[in-house]
Image 1: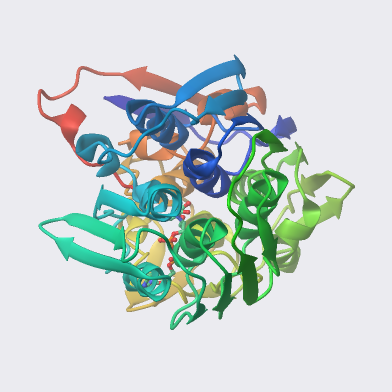
Image 2: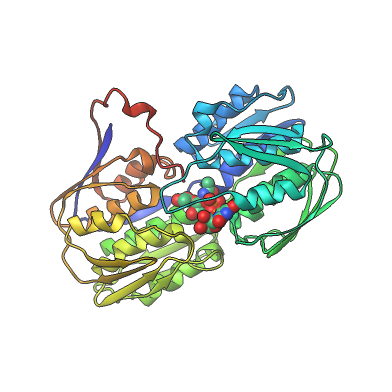
Amino acid sequence: MEKYIINGGKALHGEVEISGAKNAAVAIIPAALMVDGVCHIENIPQISDTDMLLTILKELGAKVRFLNKSTIEIDCTKVRYQDAPYDLMRKIRASYYLIGAMLGRFGSAKTTMPGGCNFGVRPIDQHIKGMTALGADVDVKNGFVYADARDGKLHGARIYLDKVSVGATMNIILAAALAQGRTVIENAAREPHIVDLANFLNSMGADIRGAGTDTVKVNGVDRLHGGSYAIIPDQIEAGTYMVAAAATGGEVLIKNVIPRHLECISAKLRETGTIVQEYEDSVLVKGASSLRKVNIKTLPYPGFPTDMQPPMGALMCLANGTSVITEGVYDNRFKYTNELRKMGAEIQVDGRVAVIEGGKRLTGAPVHACDLRAGAAMVIAGMCATGTTVVEDVRYIERGYENFVGKLKALGADIECVDEPEDSDSSDKILCVC
Ligand code: EPU
């Protein structure tokens, strides 16, 4: 079992290159299943979530070849329908995209019910509503999702999402891309990775318009052909390094980013007194000698991203004054605050609101990465604390941050990953599945 050992007190300095977006890659890899040809995909992040999805695709019969560390070729022309592999599927939340992709390609899908990082209840009712509207019978039984197109093929429909959902928007886009006729998704999510999925599918011959707005129109096509595509940079990975630079009082040039996707994070950091300078495809973050408190409310894009909430929570512990975080997406995404308290943070949580009394000195402690972004928050806190912090359960972090330790060390952090023998049954434990 790997842990990170962090000796705090080193400001980050230098340059860091951002990898491809996790939440785009985890939909684009399943989308490749719908393509009748070879997909050449660049900027695949090397993280355990993408490894897992590529393994699932291979088990389904896809040919997957790495051309270099971040470029793959996926050939699904010979894939025939089979149930998705249960043991792998249950370990990753994004496996729900196999429902849309398999329904689109085969008119049938049997997958496991996705789990989820424990941020409260995370239903998939809007995914099911969408598939049902497209003409599928969907049944959820004993932890499995069974979906079958009633007449062997999906048909376009008008779908209003009762809740703005990234996953449901992308899953319905996938299923509708090969359906007969036109699908209109209203109250759609607008995250950059939704635009990226639509651009990927369009470059393979799909006809999807309006991605990035709250109304997405999908004109179904008969076939998707092979092609080349490069995934956008990861908004949340970039935001995490921005916060880490601000928290440690360092100066970091964050390269390979789309500054427009980072606007709300840049704006909040500027409110703290941090300097953020935007360039064409990079941002420079210079930490302030003293940080001001800020309030944030997380919302679907273009609001402040819920995935940046834990790293910002760590930063607010250092800012002078009382900061308030309101979590607008999940019921319960404050478990990490218990870990921050172990380091001396003063945080009160009431439902979806956390009140942080900042300006307290953090001290190193043994803490857990409760989930992917909570783990990043603990690493940031550890880099700012006096003494040594040991972060356990770092497998959560490695689901979503490529070479986190290597990139932080290159910026001057004193962080090591150490490996300890694992409990006999922990390798099969279901991790946070984001
Ligand atoms: N929701 C429903 N019904 C649904 C779907 C969602 O009630 O059918 C609710 C959820 O319970 C939640 C809210 O709607 O309260 C938003 O959920 P959404 O569907 O947008 O999230 P997701 O697709 O499950 C993805 C990312 C998350 C990220 C969210 C929000 C993946 C694999 N996961 O989850 O990423 O927090 O969108 O942006 O893409 C992470 O990267 O750390 C992570 C957790």
